Length: 570
Image 1: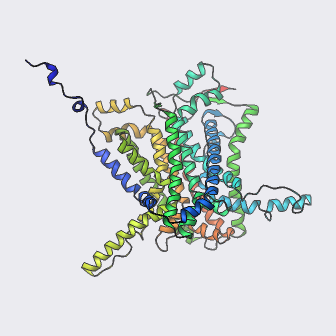
Image 2: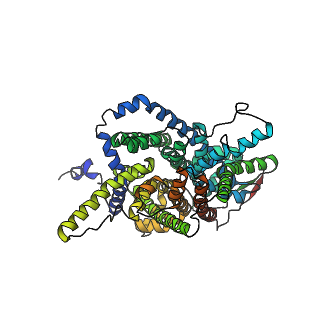
Image 3: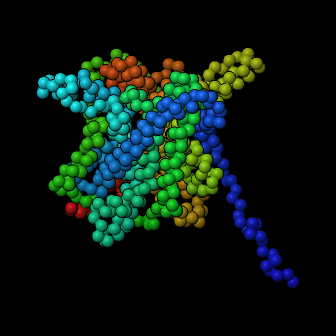
């Protein structure tokens, strides 16, 4: 009789083989379609660049690197401090103006960076109203006083920080709203006050969301073109534009774009390595109202000032300056023509936001179900479009779609004697595609951070109750993530409203948006006329921002839409 051990399968046969299920195939398909423009651009890296790259390395590459690193470090620290600090204040503290600041802190997100740069340049330059008033009041002449130059590297970093900190604020606030009261209560019983709760418990628990927000801000910084070009600051992005469209060297420009990708990849890998295998899950289905710390005296005044300052400098002052310029001059086309511009912008932004959030949800959930190296790599590559300048993404889209149009027209002409025209590259579809490629990372980072906090035991419990993978996503995860879903949607919506380079390159003929109108006028130094379109962009973005803030206030499961709680006097 043979031994039972002789029938034991080998170790290799005993290991279950991971098969590609429907979710994996769908995830890989979406990732491939979204990553196509990026891969098209990156394909130029292996091509010889001749002597152009050597010329760039010996002349301007060092300046590109130094300025880009300065912007990354400064904006990263600034957005982290402002966004995380104000998010904790409005969620956990009670002070005068708190309800107002909940949505007001999001307002700078609706202001394009190049618009705020134009507004402050007009206000702070030597011939501007501020310095003119100072000279008149004190009798100063040129050289009698020192005044900071807004058109500098430091000025660009400051303005970019003021516009981008809402990325961190929104995701950090959503994460703080979802945190467990049990963990906070344990910290309080151990003698930790509000400050130590914030630094030792709240920030580590919200780390994935905070890092996601900072990553979005840094990628937007790397992609910034309008403000840094207007200020005369040389960065990798301006170098890409100059090399690709000025010198006509696509290979060298693509290699510069690869350097931008390297920045983002290194940052993400370092953060994930520092996080290790730590995970943060909700361990209970019971949700209580969050505790609130009542601030008084100087602390209340300091909290109010801390929340007021970024709103004042990042939104109220530039909006007031633009409003003054609009009343003083204004766009002659304001009226019926603007309804068409606004309609185009709103339609593109709404459709792109819905598509991007839907695809990001599928990608993040597919990576959760099948966390293998293939799926993980595919989702990371698909989310890299945000690290590539909008115009480079546009070129990466034009290359395959122009070929597709040419092939289709050649077939129709040869067989039917007709021409279909620019079906793909000349329609609004290509704009939606570009926006999804460009801003998928915005929604993906937010949803991945939120989905990562849902304990796997909830998936297992749902599956044992007969739910499919899709049913688990629809009935379990989506209700828990609704705050992050709204945050991701509004981020994409506002980004599309402000998007400029890809829109200019890919828009159909006679199809303008508010951003294109504002840029065209500002580029001609017609700032008073450009202010009208700029203010319209801001006005359109205000209502979604307020609605998002109200929805996030009641997004905590079990809150019943009430953000109240017990107070603690400090």
